[in-house]
Image 1 (cartoon, rainbow, N blue to C red):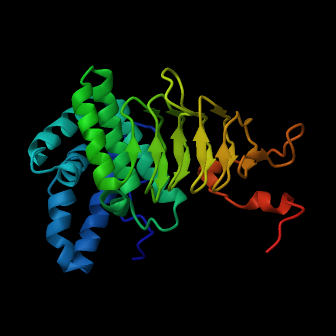
Image 2 (image 1 turned 90 degrees about the vertical axis):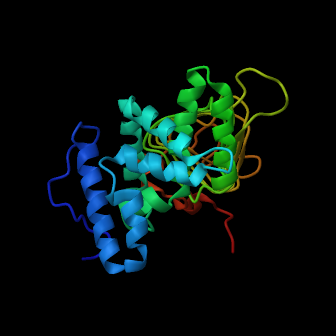
Length: 290
């Protein structure tokens, strides 16, 4: 059976329903069994990370604990911390499911849910950040910051534990992503590698970008300061954004400008963060030359 097809044949529940997590976990286990049968060299690995566990949160907690442990931060401690957090927060589990769906359906290179769970460092970094953020809100800042440091060391993704992130997030490739302390990322956002959501200097306070729902941020883009990127906007690769970007418009360049002009910018009807269309705006560049 081709890797992209569903192996668990029970009809897929409605997104966000209580049954969706159970359906997704059954699908992941079916994919892991198929992969273990087709590649015996991975059978032990797939058993220990997926097939031996009774739930998605147990598998994810075990995997994150082993990824992020060190000689002084033990995997057993991390496993207990992750499992306790995920088990007691239904919203976190719902976000994990939405993030798995985002990677599976937006990235054509993602061949299965199990592939994302085990191998997508952007997904893993995001789930670990969700736990770090929970710790931060519980006034456990030293542990949250220690976890942030390990996430940065292991996954090359640096997200301050105070940053707020919605669900249905895709960190595609993820290497070099930096998200500052007061940044906010909405739902169904896709962010590529080497994106920075940063401040503009050493001043404190609310100083980082606010990213609306459905936004797409291309590779190497830099967004600085307490600026708003409107719902459904698109930020082109390599752009440097220092001011607000209106909803459903496209900003490109360094410094960034709006496609169609500031007064009457071109607007799109789709949701870039879900459709992943990086280049349609090029047809509107009258001077685009190769």
